[in-house]
Image 1 (cartoon, rainbow, N blue to C red):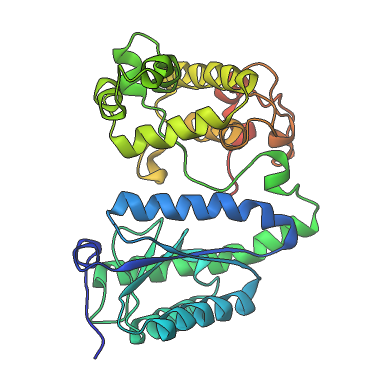
Image 2 (image 1 turned 135 degrees about the vertical axis):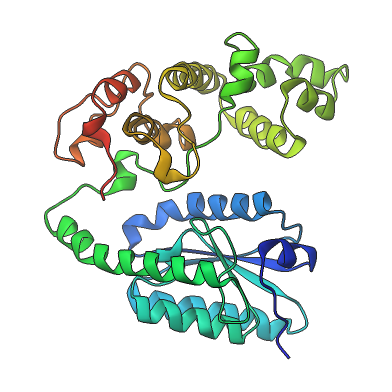
Length: 323
């Protein structure tokens, strides 16, 4: 008998294992898969899931990709039928870009005992009685929007719209750079404090937990930042810290880029995210947005801009995401 869960909190409490389903449509987008998988892993952690997730990266488009998702999840269940799973997708459109197919897949997953979580939904999705009925309605609406947008997306590709990842528009939600703590520490970022604290960390004077407390963030957040920064070459790390300072100074003026929900973000906040998202994830691949800038980002919208933080705030129209 399939166990019924109606909330994310319930699934967390009952020890459900996250299945992270990442999917891109083309070989050109394959490089974006690791970033998508990182986002899914962070989403699962943020929701409170403790079990080690199972990653299912898929490079396949349309209905074929949807069937692949279904097949992979079924294989995981068949291998360990006594365990409980929840499927985690980046957003509703990653389940299916056709409303009918999306509802069918949710029904199939529910019958397998697997509820669904996405990055744009507040609660579990599942066939009644699994999941939440208000969430059902929102899911149907978003699926319809995704289906309508599919034709526009194909047209844009035919017109030669630049591949988003190639120009630095990496998938993922805006990173929290801890503006509140930046203001508290009189313009010294959490990231810079972590780097400055490394001598004390190495000689044992300051513990990881002590550093987290000093920074005003939790251990998980501190460890993630610390690991990322320490993997960078020294020159890249120093430039990265300067860019973070520039972004935080901009956020002091326009507000946080990661304001939630996404629909509440202003045009300037969206533009600031667009010119910084690629660099923050791959600082050795993309130009630094505080001084050099990436003009290719504005050209996605068929406009001319230098792709800097300053230009994004002064001329946000050039850097708006497609509707």
